[in-house]
Structure formats: C-alpha cells, structure tokens
Length: 376
Image (cartoon, rainbow, N blue to C red; front, side, top):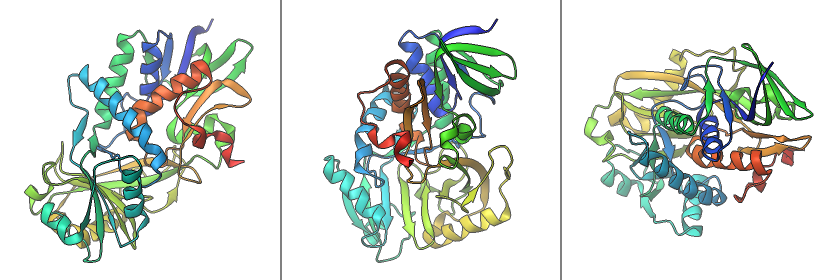
C-alpha cells in the first residue's frame, strides 16, 4: 500500500523547501522528496551567498514580487536563529546606455525606489574595490544585499517540520503519473499518492514535465572566491553586491562573507548546456583563467590568490523568465522551473505562489508572464 498525502513536492531545494513550508503552514499534509541531502550543492540553491536586489534590470514587473519576497524572508528570519538577509546595497554598472544600467534605473523610477546614478569615479570613491573604465556608469540602490541560500533552505525546512510536514532526503523520484484521485509518485524507495503535486526539480524539471524539454535547459555555471590584496575594500560594509556589463559578458559578485575571498562569476559562464547527471562538476583551470582575467581588469585589488571555486547549474528558458503554472492537461500539478540564474532571491514568494497554484489553481500574484504555454 502506498502512503497518501494531500500534496507532494518533488525537489526540496530553494523553491521546494519554501513550497513545502507554505503548504504545511496552511494545514496541508505534505511530503517533500529530495534525491540528495537537504541542503545540497548539486543544483542551484547553494554557494554561501546569493544576490538580493530590488533594482531589477531584467524587468520592472519583478519588483512587486521582490518586495513580497523581502517581507517573507524577514518573517522567516524572525523565527530562525540565524540571519538570512544582509544589506550591502546593490550596484548595476556598465557602459553608457547599457541595458543593465538603464533597466535598473527604470525599475527604480517606476517603483519609487531610492537610487543614485554614479560615474565610475564616484563609484570608486565610495567603494574603492571597483576600478571600472572611465566612461562606465552605475546605479546604486541601498536596499540590495545578499541571502545565505543554504541557511534559507534550512529555515524553510525547519518551519515545514514544525508545521507537520514530512521531508525525505536521499530518495530519488523515478516517475509520476496522474490517477483518478490525484497523482502517484514512484521513487527508488517506494510509492506515494496525493491529491496534488508540485514539481520544483531545478535542472531535472524537464525529466518530469515533457513540455519543458528544450525549454528548461541546464547550464554549467562556475563562481570563484579570490583573496583580496586590499581586504578592507571588500568587506560587506564597503562593498555592495553588483552586476557589471562588459564587452565580455555580464558578471556579478559579492563582498567577502563566510569564507575567505570575494565571490564573483560570469552569467552563462562558458555557455555550456549540460546533462545535470553527467557534467564536469570540478572547476578547471580554464574556468579559473576566465574569471581571473576579469578580476584583474575590473577589481585589481581583489585579484589575489584563488581561495575557492564551485560549480552550480542554471536552468534557462528561451526568454530568461520563470515558469510558474499548472499543467494544462493535469491541473492538479503545479510547476516552478526555468529560473535562469536569477531566481533564488524570489524563493520565499515562489513558495507562496506554488502553494496557491497547487491548492487553488490560481494566485493573487501577477504571474501571467510566467505561463508554461507562452513558448507554444
């Protein structure tokens, strides 16, 4: 006999842990299934620090979701014994009229966010770790900062457990199928049934949702931590989180926190689409050279010895926006996928949205832009 639940969440990373917590606190008998540890470093919800920013160059429409996410992170933090969200301010910089600068400013103006437009000299005077070309400009927004992803997952899981959720790690989901009464999930340990299913499987999402094949595409990503030659310049009090547009692509980074070195990476690092079960986990010297060359040019006081490198996985959609929807042919199944390298900061509100979709089939949040059928 298979065990029966009100809802099952497939994948308990950043998004899944938040979803389990939101469902459990609404009184839902929920099971979370995770093939690795909780938390783990095989997907997209790790790396010691993850950016939180309100000045959102990708689209001003994200800002209301970010404000709600911030409220939910603070609520979660209030009942957790460790800080989750740190304020450093955020910087979006690049050449004049760069989309990153203009998009960041547009989000600030449309949503009445405090910001300053700075020259490269102004930026370096305030934050001496930056050494940008003279013609570059920057948008500084004081409310940005970073989240601790592993701790955020732990906090959501702790909340879920207190509310009565069951979470099973190191149990791999083999398949799921609809039934007359809901869904049935088979794992390498057994089988479970439920009225509803939420799929938050990260880079494995397309393995469980056929329509996401070729749409939610895993990509190998690498970040590094370099020990600064001027450590004081890269402390959280003097160094904000940042995005930087260059002729070699878009880069992003963080102050020193938690481990030695200041952390940064290149979006779509080497543009390697991969199989999440068979790719090069260990960073290479080629990965290091790419990142170190960038640091020498734009953050020379930070380009000291390498302290650490990590791989993670982006799961990219064709338009770079999320998938948050129920399956048209199986409305009892909700999907959160394709977060395209910028999703973690939203995890707290995405958990709320997916709980809404699973229980009601709709949400008060504006998620029309994230429909699964937009790719047809």
